[in-house]
Amino acid sequence: MGILLFESEDPDKFDRSLQPVYLEFNGDATARNKLNSYMDHVWDGFYAGQIRRSRFPGLVYGGKQAGKAGAPLYTIVFTGTPAKKFRFTFLSHSKTAGITVKIAYPGAESRQVEKDGKVIEYNAWDRKLKPATYGEIKQTRCGENRFTGVKAILEFYITANCELHIAPRDAIQTEIRMEWDMKTFFAKGGTTAFVDRLCASLGIHASTVKVVSVYEGSLKLNYEIAPSKDEPMSLAEIKRKQTEKFATGKMDLGAPILDVTTGTTSVIKDGVVKAAGFAPVILVATSTNAGDAVWINWFQPWFWQIYKACLLNAPIYMFYNFIAYGLIWMWNELG
Image (cartoon, rainbow, N blue to C red; front, top):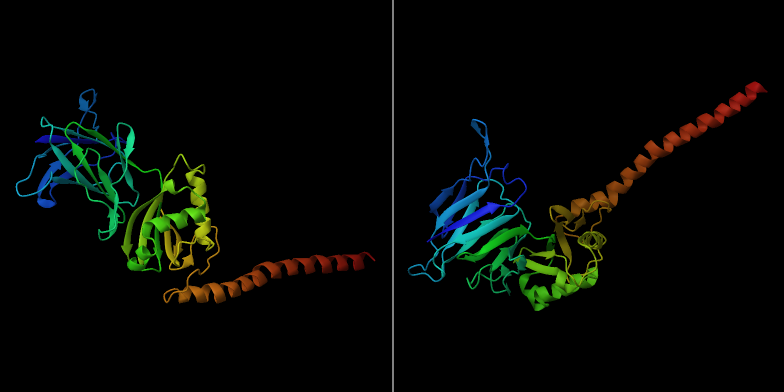
């Protein structure tokens, strides 16, 4: 047995309420601990200060399970938006105690696990999983972790008296959909070839790119670009260059690109450029973007001609004639 203690490290840890928080044992919704946060670290005279520190202690079992391999899994369910940064500690007298912790985040932003000030990388990629993603938690060391894209689920293993920190990854999060199937994708080199093509198109070092997940429909792939000591360009420069390459159709990834979303911003949707600052162009013709093709290729140029004739050319022509004929009339009157 032990106490899993976790708390927010965000600036608003005293002001924003995260409670109640539920600690769920082995995915069983009927085996839950309901946790509340600490209260009243200060007093204003006679009254409580109404300040709550977002810190949650939960009693957990971290030993071996009868009939099951490995330590238990505890899912943390937040009723409010989770903090961006957390500190986790597992307090136990047993040196062999440990648990796996699972957190589902509401946003697509990926997270990283830090121990002793160093980032612990995700488990090795496992293409045998459906969908292909980072390998499952083996409970081999404190801080072992993986992040499942799309579902935005972070899992990590924590052992007795180990302290871990959770924080958002400083990275460009991108989701892309291509006109490919899973079998062809991996036959053409899979994630390795994808990273090579992406880096070649952007002119960046391969160490900056990490594939988060690959799944079908047509073929969807989540990846992130993070800072690297081997890459001189900043993330802002890479993001700007990536958007330009996608929006101008100059990104060669081995298959037609149907959708691209960077963070929450749509760059390409259903084969049509949607990025701000770029003209809407159909990069890939599909059965569902025929309406866009009619609008972009026919109606838009026609409406522009009407706008230019009625609201630009006509007023200018009227003003020019007013001045010209006015001057002629004034000259004749003076003469």
